[in-house]
Image (cartoon, rainbow, N blue to C red; front, side, top):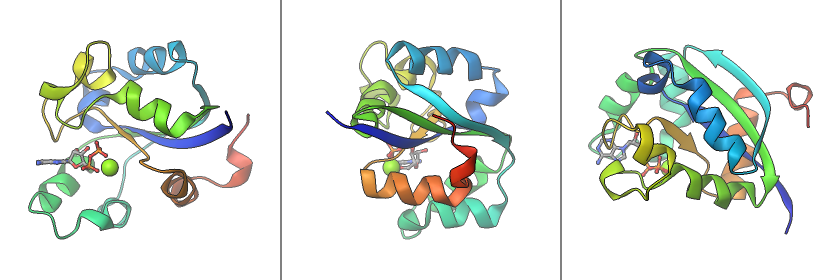
Length: 140
Ligand code: ADP
Ligand code: MG
């Protein structure tokens, strides 16, 4: 298995409820390492650019509104098979379908306010990391 890097966002519903530490505990217990992290308020332009693949979806406008509604925590996670591993740790997009023990099962409020983002492929992980971090921000 290869060491990979994936991109994570702790979303505004989670920062509002002060859940950054609890979510990081689940991440770390799964064997992933937080190797870069910063709290930020996304601009509308950043949120629209980040979610550009979803711009034709009916929920795009609401999703952007949600992502700029409060602070987020932007993260790079390192670990073996980190991309797939973090998708497992996050759980299904809709918390109603998420497995026990996953971040979304534990903490998500709804299909939209689902507490975390995680990259869906190694290729997208590299693009998403570069969208928010310089290589020198990542300390493995
Ligand atoms: P995931 O975050 O699991 O990769 P998607 O990439 O399909 O899910 O969707 C991106 C984000 O858009 C989701 O995490 C969620 O916040 C929001 N979203 C997805 N589907 C819906 C929906 N049907 N209604 C409202 N928001 C949604
Ligand atoms: Mg996705």
